Amino acid sequence: MANHNSLCSLLISFTLFSILLSIIPTTTSYLFPHKKLSIESIFQFGDSLSDTGNLIRDGPIGAHNPCGSPPYGETLHDTTGRCSDGLLMIDFFATYFRLPLLSPYLNKQGNFKHGVNFAVAGSTALDADALAAKGATSPVTNSSLSVQLNWFKSHLHSICQNISVRKSLVIMGEIGGNDYNYALLQGKTMDELRSMVPNVVHTIKEAVKEVIDFGAKKVVVSGNFPIGCMPIYLSLFESKDPSMYDELECLKPFNELAKFHNDRLQQAIKELQQKYPNVAIDLMKMGFKKHVVG
Image 1 (cartoon, rainbow, N blue to C red):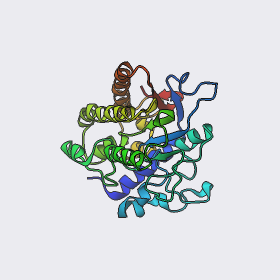
Image 2 (cartoon, one colour; image 1 turned 45 degrees about the vertical axis):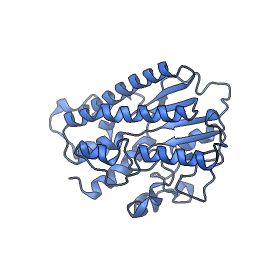
Image 3 (cartoon, rainbow, N blue to C red; image 1 turned 90 degrees about the vertical axis):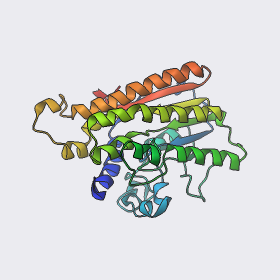
């Protein structure tokens, strides 16, 4: 069983690592054209890569998470609960569309006029029962993707859907990475992690279907990134076997897992595109410019 310090370090490094990544959407012509796209609001689902303050309001464990204390948020001059010293990817999306930075759903004094951030640092795609069936647990939060979807639906009902979902951008993820992180740190083998991928991808696919059924017309689904290049994995799973490493000194088995996830996710998105031809659904690949996974 992984200790709390390892899990906490993973949660933080998982987010900080993402700041170093290039964001490479596979097809951007209809989502981010040169002509200004009309986006009135953004709804964000995900984990620590996107959480702007939900975890620190999500029970006692979250309240004591380091992301709620300095030096986190120092460049924003406020400890907002972002697992970063400054802005996250979602903040740059909001800025691009000239919208306010998204308030976290659990901040009841937040400004939700132009969207809501439902992401929770440490969250998983699979819920607690599904994760337990795979022999893993989520030690940080139980606010999985299904919980975030329930928040989304409750929010829309509370405002009588005054914010038109049809004119919104929905960003699904990154989500699912922690399912693998926790299972790995809790002693699961790489084969066992690969067996989780179909369940994780199916859960993400069903979540996309739900938001589309609520009227979403523009959805970005975020893939996983080259986790084999993450410093914490390079440290925890250091090997003397040179065949474990690629030309960039990253751990190949971990990046192969991320690629397997992204390949399955890409296939799921193709199926959704066929089912919903009038909805723009795109996969956002993340990785170093020389190390895109998937």
